Length: 217
Image 1 (cartoon, rainbow, N blue to C red):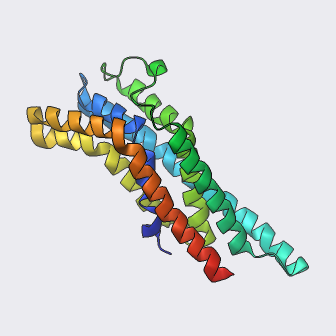
Image 2 (cartoon, rainbow, N blue to C red; image 1 turned 180 degrees about the vertical axis):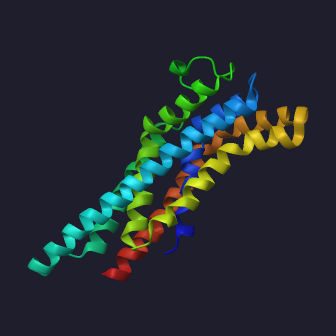
């Protein structure tokens, strides 16, 4: 496994509510400042989340390795694979249950005002309170740690997540007024079809995890 395997899960984090908010911010009164603040908030939390999962998995893996030396029957890799697979199943269920939820939550208030401080807080909160994001970050960090990959292998996942959410801003910068049609189409796609793509990508990653289990059996 390489860090490329976990990159598709960046779509799971980016798609949905956060992408819709990113579209609205790109159409706000201060699109550049608000969008950059939003991206910074999301990027910081995602980086912290996958890092925490990576560190926790390595620590627990060390404890498991010690137990294996004593008991002679604990397989650290298989145990982590099982945990990751459970996380992915939970993630698939959550995505299915929340599939009809679209648009910014009411508690976010007015997205269109484009306040950079508000956008920064929104980026942080939308990741922290989203079960799909929490489960995805846990699965990514644990999977990277399970294969003994160094911490920097998490960075491409964070960067791809931020890049996907930056697409509305990039469309605005590149297309100007013509970006309105593109942003509207992007928002409608996120509202109607993001969950389908998410389920496919989760299944794709789960397949790799099952293959790891089979190979280590």
